[in-house]
Length: 261
Image (tube, rainbow, N blue to C red; front, side, top):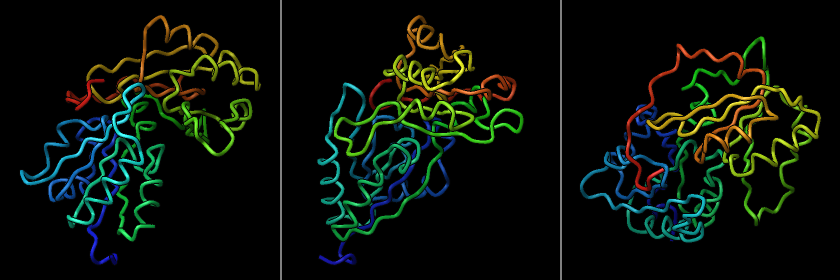
């Protein structure tokens, strides 16, 4: 089967939760697509943008709730491309930032399926912004590193070298880091990061239910345990945390998720 005989799969970023942060292009594609394949962190408000004839497929993955294996998701996308002309693969945040979008794109490309990527607003930028924390600042941080705090057990490359990161960047934005926060904090301090470095954890950053704490790095894990913060959360570490401007924080959006968070 040639590329011309397949429909196009659009890898679309849904943004960090607040539906108002969806891009115009993403909204157009969702409203016109023949099939929608979406994650658990995609709000119902975005799923409801589809037409009445659109085929819906939930393939959400969450810690402890791995409903659809990645291989199965790949197969679903390929099968849909055989039948429909426009398939939207709607992924939380940005599809190419810790979202397995590259894996899906590579799989489909090898099968001869046309793929287009539509970037989305990532939670690593949006969640800090929604509590007024700039992830860079002329007086506090000219560099920032985005890093995953939860790596797959089947990863075929070395794990994150937290000790090396301790002095290599002005700030760290950590995705999926709450579960491993004690280890991460210990490793950063062992690598030379000042234990008193400002840090923050933002849970459900852009939606109602948002929770937020600030602490010195050395006490961060204990604060998270005491306050019972859980995923999905973004961790920010660096002097930029002290430049928080609460007055510019937009209100979190009231949304509904296919899988409650």
